[in-house]
Length: 258
Image (cartoon, rainbow, N blue to C red; front, top):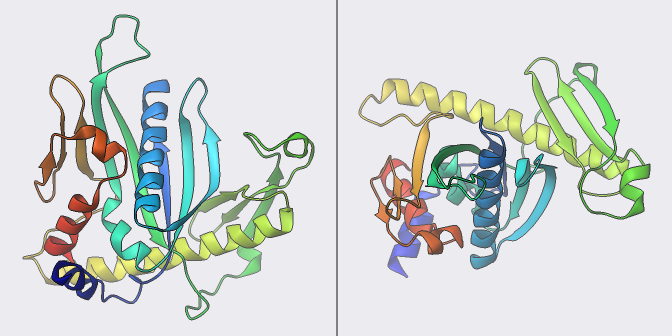
Protein backbone atom coordinates (compact mmCIF):
# COMPACT_ATOMS: atom_id res chain seq x y z
CA UNK A 1 0.00 0.00 0.00
CA UNK A 2 2.85 2.37 0.86
CA UNK A 3 4.58 1.59 -2.44
CA UNK A 4 1.37 2.34 -4.34
CA UNK A 5 0.94 5.65 -2.49
CA UNK A 6 4.56 6.56 -3.22
CA UNK A 7 4.08 5.91 -6.93
CA UNK A 8 0.87 7.92 -7.10
CA UNK A 9 2.63 10.79 -5.35
CA UNK A 10 5.20 10.77 -8.16
CA UNK A 11 2.43 11.16 -10.71
CA UNK A 12 1.93 14.81 -9.84
CA UNK A 13 2.32 16.43 -13.25
CA UNK A 14 -0.71 18.02 -14.85
CA UNK A 15 -0.88 15.46 -17.63
CA UNK A 16 -0.22 12.30 -15.57
CA UNK A 17 -3.86 11.73 -14.62
CA UNK A 18 -5.05 11.80 -18.24
CA UNK A 19 -5.97 8.84 -20.43
CA UNK A 20 -3.24 7.72 -22.82
CA UNK A 21 -2.86 6.74 -26.45
CA UNK A 22 0.00 4.39 -27.31
CA UNK A 23 1.11 4.13 -30.92
CA UNK A 24 3.30 1.26 -32.09
CA UNK A 25 5.21 1.28 -35.38
CA UNK A 26 7.22 -1.56 -36.88
CA UNK A 27 10.81 -0.72 -37.76
CA UNK A 28 12.75 -1.68 -40.87
CA UNK A 29 12.88 -5.40 -41.48
CA UNK A 30 9.54 -6.32 -43.01
CA UNK A 31 7.73 -9.31 -41.56
CA UNK A 32 10.12 -9.70 -38.61
CA UNK A 33 9.53 -6.19 -37.30
CA UNK A 34 5.82 -6.28 -38.10
CA UNK A 35 5.42 -9.48 -36.08
CA UNK A 36 7.35 -7.84 -33.22
CA UNK A 37 5.07 -4.79 -33.36
CA UNK A 38 2.03 -7.05 -33.00
CA UNK A 39 3.66 -8.82 -30.03
CA UNK A 40 4.16 -5.43 -28.35
CA UNK A 41 0.55 -4.49 -29.05
CA UNK A 42 -0.60 -7.68 -27.34
CA UNK A 43 1.76 -6.98 -24.39
CA UNK A 44 0.27 -3.53 -23.79
CA UNK A 45 -3.30 -4.76 -24.20
CA UNK A 46 -2.62 -7.48 -21.62
CA UNK A 47 -1.04 -4.89 -19.30
CA UNK A 48 -4.16 -2.76 -19.61
CA UNK A 49 -6.36 -5.77 -18.87
CA UNK A 50 -4.27 -6.69 -15.79
CA UNK A 51 -4.53 -3.16 -14.44
CA UNK A 52 -8.24 -2.79 -15.19
CA UNK A 53 -7.86 -0.10 -17.83
CA UNK A 54 -10.47 0.17 -20.55
CA UNK A 55 -8.63 -0.33 -23.84
CA UNK A 56 -9.69 0.46 -27.39
CA UNK A 57 -7.79 -0.10 -30.64
CA UNK A 58 -8.30 3.16 -32.54
CA UNK A 59 -6.34 2.34 -35.67
CA UNK A 60 -4.43 -0.66 -36.99
CA UNK A 61 -2.52 -1.26 -40.22
CA UNK A 62 -2.06 -4.95 -40.92
CA UNK A 63 1.35 -6.29 -41.99
CA UNK A 64 2.01 -7.56 -45.50
CA UNK A 65 2.44 -11.18 -44.43
CA UNK A 66 2.08 -11.26 -40.65
CA UNK A 67 1.92 -8.84 -37.73
CA UNK A 68 1.11 -5.13 -38.00
CA UNK A 69 2.75 -2.08 -39.53
CA UNK A 70 1.26 0.23 -36.92
CA UNK A 71 -1.45 0.50 -34.28
CA UNK A 72 -2.92 3.09 -31.91
CA UNK A 73 -4.44 1.99 -28.60
CA UNK A 74 -6.33 4.15 -26.11
CA UNK A 75 -6.04 3.41 -22.38
CA UNK A 76 -8.82 4.86 -20.27
CA UNK A 77 -8.45 5.01 -16.48
CA UNK A 78 -6.68 6.70 -13.57
CA UNK A 79 -3.13 7.87 -14.32
CA UNK A 80 -2.95 5.98 -17.62
CA UNK A 81 -0.50 8.42 -19.19
CA UNK A 82 1.48 8.75 -15.96
CA UNK A 83 2.23 5.03 -15.99
CA UNK A 84 2.75 4.64 -19.74
CA UNK A 85 4.80 7.76 -20.51
CA UNK A 86 8.08 5.91 -19.84
CA UNK A 87 7.33 3.36 -22.57
CA UNK A 88 8.11 5.78 -25.40
CA UNK A 89 11.20 4.76 -27.33
CA UNK A 90 12.62 1.92 -29.38
CA UNK A 91 12.07 -1.67 -28.24
CA UNK A 92 14.55 -4.27 -29.54
CA UNK A 93 13.88 -8.00 -29.96
CA UNK A 94 16.47 -10.75 -30.43
CA UNK A 95 15.16 -14.25 -31.24
CA UNK A 96 15.32 -17.25 -33.53
CA UNK A 97 13.08 -16.20 -36.40
CA UNK A 98 9.95 -18.30 -37.01
CA UNK A 99 9.94 -16.82 -40.54
CA UNK A 100 13.48 -17.97 -41.42
CA UNK A 101 13.69 -21.46 -42.93
CA UNK A 102 17.26 -21.71 -41.60
CA UNK A 103 16.09 -20.76 -38.09
CA UNK A 104 18.68 -18.00 -37.80
CA UNK A 105 18.79 -15.40 -35.06
CA UNK A 106 17.24 -12.05 -36.01
CA UNK A 107 17.11 -8.63 -34.40
CA UNK A 108 13.93 -6.58 -34.82
CA UNK A 109 12.94 -3.08 -33.78
CA UNK A 110 9.64 -1.34 -33.11
CA UNK A 111 8.94 2.12 -31.77
CA UNK A 112 6.42 2.97 -29.06
CA UNK A 113 5.07 6.45 -28.45
CA UNK A 114 2.73 7.33 -25.56
CA UNK A 115 0.90 10.65 -25.35
CA UNK A 116 -1.91 11.99 -23.13
CA UNK A 117 -5.48 12.33 -24.31
CA UNK A 118 -6.48 15.96 -23.83
CA UNK A 119 -9.66 16.55 -21.87
CA UNK A 120 -12.12 19.44 -21.90
CA UNK A 121 -10.05 21.38 -19.37
CA UNK A 122 -7.11 21.73 -21.78
CA UNK A 123 -7.52 24.05 -24.74
CA UNK A 124 -5.54 23.41 -27.92
CA UNK A 125 -6.24 25.89 -30.70
CA UNK A 126 -6.27 24.44 -34.22
CA UNK A 127 -6.97 26.56 -37.28
CA UNK A 128 -9.32 24.57 -39.58
CA UNK A 129 -7.45 26.09 -42.55
CA UNK A 130 -4.35 24.17 -41.43
CA UNK A 131 -6.14 20.82 -41.76
CA UNK A 132 -6.56 18.64 -44.84
CA UNK A 133 -8.81 15.58 -44.67
CA UNK A 134 -8.82 12.34 -46.64
CA UNK A 135 -11.22 9.42 -46.43
CA UNK A 136 -10.48 5.80 -47.26
CA UNK A 137 -11.88 2.34 -46.75
CA UNK A 138 -11.19 0.67 -43.42
CA UNK A 139 -8.85 -2.29 -43.35
CA UNK A 140 -9.14 -5.47 -41.34
CA UNK A 141 -12.26 -7.34 -40.14
CA UNK A 142 -15.58 -5.58 -39.91
CA UNK A 143 -18.02 -7.07 -42.38
CA UNK A 144 -19.18 -5.90 -45.79
CA UNK A 145 -19.48 -2.26 -44.67
CA UNK A 146 -15.71 -1.98 -44.19
CA UNK A 147 -14.89 -2.54 -47.82
CA UNK A 148 -17.73 -0.54 -49.36
CA UNK A 149 -17.83 2.74 -47.43
CA UNK A 150 -14.95 5.18 -46.99
CA UNK A 151 -15.54 5.63 -43.25
CA UNK A 152 -11.88 5.80 -42.20
CA UNK A 153 -10.31 9.25 -42.07
CA UNK A 154 -6.84 10.77 -42.29
CA UNK A 155 -6.07 14.33 -41.21
CA UNK A 156 -2.88 16.29 -41.91
CA UNK A 157 -1.88 19.28 -39.78
CA UNK A 158 0.25 21.55 -41.98
CA UNK A 159 2.16 23.57 -39.31
CA UNK A 160 3.37 20.51 -37.37
CA UNK A 161 3.43 17.95 -40.20
CA UNK A 162 1.46 15.50 -38.02
CA UNK A 163 -0.73 12.91 -39.76
CA UNK A 164 -3.43 11.06 -37.81
CA UNK A 165 -5.63 8.21 -38.99
CA UNK A 166 -8.73 6.76 -37.35
CA UNK A 167 -10.95 3.87 -38.40
CA UNK A 168 -12.42 3.01 -35.00
CA UNK A 169 -16.10 3.06 -36.05
CA UNK A 170 -18.22 2.75 -39.18
CA UNK A 171 -19.24 6.40 -38.83
CA UNK A 172 -17.05 8.83 -40.76
CA UNK A 173 -18.27 11.66 -38.52
CA UNK A 174 -17.28 9.86 -35.33
CA UNK A 175 -13.91 8.95 -36.83
CA UNK A 176 -13.29 12.60 -37.78
CA UNK A 177 -14.11 13.68 -34.23
CA UNK A 178 -11.78 11.06 -32.74
CA UNK A 179 -8.98 11.90 -35.20
CA UNK A 180 -9.21 15.57 -34.18
CA UNK A 181 -8.95 14.58 -30.50
CA UNK A 182 -5.91 12.42 -31.27
CA UNK A 183 -4.31 15.33 -33.16
CA UNK A 184 -4.93 17.72 -30.27
CA UNK A 185 -3.43 15.19 -27.87
CA UNK A 186 -0.26 14.88 -29.95
CA UNK A 187 0.09 18.66 -30.21
CA UNK A 188 -0.36 18.91 -26.43
CA UNK A 189 2.31 16.26 -25.83
CA UNK A 190 4.73 18.11 -28.13
CA UNK A 191 4.30 21.24 -26.03
CA UNK A 192 4.89 19.22 -22.87
CA UNK A 193 8.05 17.76 -24.38
CA UNK A 194 9.34 21.24 -25.22
CA UNK A 195 8.82 22.30 -21.61
CA UNK A 196 10.58 19.17 -20.32
CA UNK A 197 13.53 19.73 -22.66
CA UNK A 198 13.97 23.25 -21.28
CA UNK A 199 13.94 21.87 -17.73
CA UNK A 200 16.41 19.11 -18.67
CA UNK A 201 18.77 21.66 -20.16
CA UNK A 202 18.82 23.53 -16.87
CA UNK A 203 19.04 20.45 -14.66
CA UNK A 204 22.11 18.75 -16.13
CA UNK A 205 22.14 16.19 -13.36
CA UNK A 206 19.03 14.52 -14.75
CA UNK A 207 19.29 11.91 -17.47
CA UNK A 208 17.61 12.98 -20.68
CA UNK A 209 15.20 10.54 -22.28
CA UNK A 210 14.43 11.40 -25.88
CA UNK A 211 11.94 9.90 -28.28
CA UNK A 212 13.70 7.52 -30.62
CA UNK A 213 16.21 6.24 -28.10
CA UNK A 214 16.47 2.50 -27.50
CA UNK A 215 15.02 1.84 -24.07
CA UNK A 216 14.59 -1.92 -23.67
CA UNK A 217 15.99 -5.18 -24.99
CA UNK A 218 13.92 -8.37 -25.21
CA UNK A 219 16.24 -11.35 -25.75
CA UNK A 220 14.63 -14.74 -26.46
CA UNK A 221 17.83 -16.45 -27.71
CA UNK A 222 20.58 -17.51 -26.91
CA UNK A 223 19.34 -16.73 -23.37
CA UNK A 224 16.13 -15.27 -21.97
CA UNK A 225 16.29 -11.74 -20.65
CA UNK A 226 14.32 -8.50 -20.77
CA UNK A 227 16.40 -5.53 -19.66
CA UNK A 228 15.58 -1.84 -19.45
CA UNK A 229 18.64 0.13 -20.52
CA UNK A 230 17.69 3.23 -18.52
CA UNK A 231 17.10 1.68 -15.10
CA UNK A 232 19.00 -1.63 -15.53
CA UNK A 233 15.94 -3.51 -14.26
CA UNK A 234 15.91 -6.98 -15.81
CA UNK A 235 14.11 -10.29 -15.64
CA UNK A 236 14.59 -13.71 -17.18
CA UNK A 237 10.85 -14.39 -17.18
CA UNK A 238 10.30 -13.31 -20.77
CA UNK A 239 6.89 -14.96 -21.11
CA UNK A 240 5.42 -13.05 -18.17
CA UNK A 241 6.65 -9.77 -19.64
CA UNK A 242 5.07 -10.54 -23.00
CA UNK A 243 1.87 -11.39 -21.12
CA UNK A 244 1.75 -7.84 -19.78
CA UNK A 245 3.78 -7.98 -16.57
CA UNK A 246 5.76 -4.78 -17.12
CA UNK A 247 4.95 -3.00 -13.86
CA UNK A 248 8.50 -3.47 -12.52
CA UNK A 249 9.89 -1.58 -15.51
CA UNK A 250 7.24 1.15 -15.22
CA UNK A 251 7.78 1.64 -11.48
CA UNK A 252 11.56 1.70 -11.80
CA UNK A 253 11.31 4.39 -14.49
CA UNK A 254 9.02 6.53 -12.33
CA UNK A 255 11.23 6.20 -9.28
CA UNK A 256 14.34 7.25 -11.22
CA UNK A 257 12.95 9.86 -13.60
CA UNK A 258 9.64 11.16 -12.23
